[in-house]
Amino acid sequence: MLIGRPGAEPEIKTFNNSKKARFSLAVTENKKNANGEWVNDTQWFPIIAWGAAADRVEKNVKKGKRIAIDGSLRNHEWTDDKGQRHSVTEVWVNDLFLIDFDKE
Image (cartoon, rainbow, N blue to C red; front, top):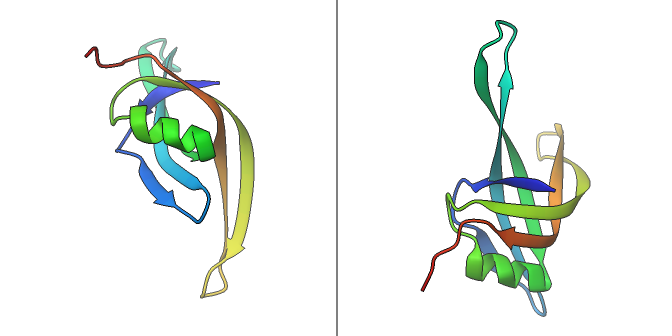
C-alpha cells in the first residue's frame, strides 16, 4: 500500500479490448536525518493500471490529489537499440482509494 500524490495527469492508452493508465506517484516520508533534524524524503514510483482499475484512474486521479494505491510489484528488463540493458520496477494497481476528492 502506498499513499502519495501523482506528479502529473495520468497517461491513458486504449487497446482493442483494454485500457492502460500510467502515472508517477510521489510518496513522502517525514524522518530524522543524521543530525536529528526532521526532513522530508520523497520517493517516486511508476504506477500502472489495467482494465477497470485504469477506468477508475482515468475518472478520478488528478495531479497533486492524494490517493492510496494497493498493488503488486512487477519487474521489467529490456535491451535498447544501443545494446544497453535497462530495468524498472512498477507498481501494478489492484485497487485505489481517493483521499483528496472534489465535492460536487
